[in-house]
Amino acid sequence: MAAAIVLLPCALLFVCSAWLRRALYAADDNRSLVVVKRVSSWKDAVTVGGVVAVPMIVWIGVVLGAMQLAVTTGSGAIFFLVYGVSSAVLGALAAWLVAGLLLLLVSSLRRGRAMTATGPETPQGERWVVEGLAARAQRDGAAAFRLAVRAVGSVPEGKVIVAVARTDRLKEAYVRLGFAHGDLNRLFLTT
Image 1 (cartoon, rainbow, N blue to C red):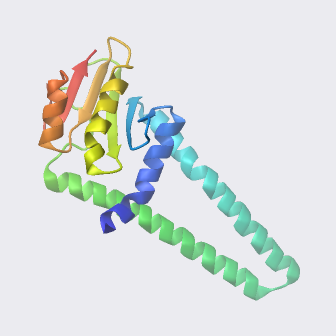
Image 2: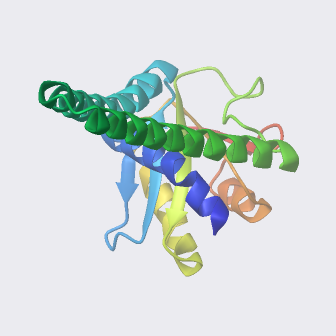
Image 3: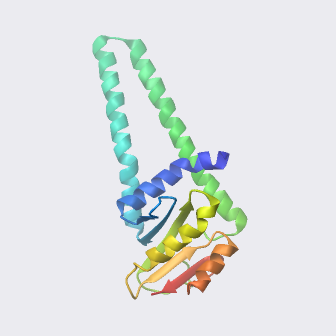
């Protein structure tokens, strides 16, 4: 439970950026989702930057407005209250995000798992990644995988689809779909 709470900001960034890139697929009953998108580091950076920048700009505007109010009223108490609360909230959110990223990093390194879906064994060509299979409950896991199969079918022909399987069972399911084994837990399929 604690790990889920720590990972919440990372998950929100991931889902929001996938949604902005129109790469988020949800089941009809909204009990599972998957992300299938073209591999593009700069698009990921821009969308995550946008997801972070918009609330930050709003936050800064509110803080500056409150500080302006404190200055015009001559209230040092309001000024220090706004400054203290805004600093504490910003610091807590930053620590929360860093803790989530560190947890992801440590868990990947500890399991000896691939951290990226592509590697030297991945065929050349335009690459698409299947990631973020998520289900509301464990019994919905099969629905998430069926959703991934449908989403993979929407990838244009001649492209390389890559994935990272977090479990051996998921890796076997990808292989049954025609994916080839890569290094560690990476898989790939040429459409």
